[in-house]
Amino acid sequence: MSLFAVLDPAVGLAHDVVAALATVLPTAAAIVLFTVGVRLALHPLARAAARGEKARARLAPKISELNRKHKDRPEKLQAALAELYKEEKASPFAGCLPMLVQIPFFSVMYRLFTTPNDLLGHTLFGVPLGLHVGSAQGAAQWVVFGLLYAALAGVAYVGFRRARRAQAAQPASATPQPGLAFLPYLSFGTVLFAALVPLAAGIYLLTTTAWSAAERAWLHRGSAPVPAVALI
Image 1: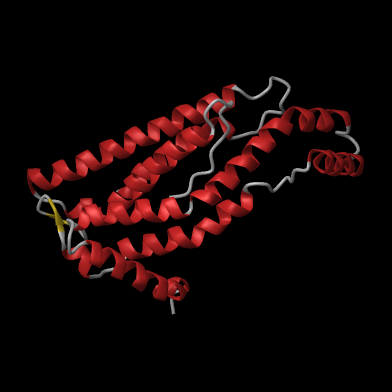
Image 2: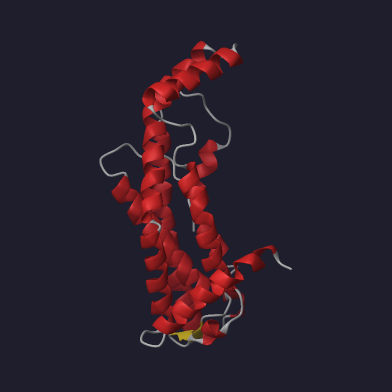
């Protein structure tokens, strides 16, 4: 039995909701509306994660100073960090739990739009929602996939720019981390991933990544950008 089979009851419920929406809307629009509804329901978790990120960003200079001061005394460093978090009423894991809680929801949506079902037999401008780009034929199908990937690339570029600004905003005293220079480019991984899934999943990816970009910009408005942990 597949590890993801435990999600099947939730996937079935999600299928029924999208199918109901598809009776009054085009199926592609139903996918977008359903995705927006789920992201709206998860918004309180995103707010909690943003608060945690802001707390870590606010404490970053103090943590960097403690690392410098106690770099040769790990036990002293741990005690100093614990005292700092206690004084600031923060946690080193603030924001992580809300992000982790969201993973089952995204797993359900991913499985719904990648597992063969009747929804994938519907079309968008004549292109079956279950079609992969590798099986596309004719100019019309290529245009639909091309527009989808162009939109995903645009959203990815927004994430890339924000990640680059977050890196530039890091204090000069911060210890360089190997490989972090490559981190902003991971935003474009969504475009590559979309090439491996059916059109329906690509529509879901575009909707949820666009929501993430807009939500993140709104939650962090007026504050220095912080590196993002993307969930799709």
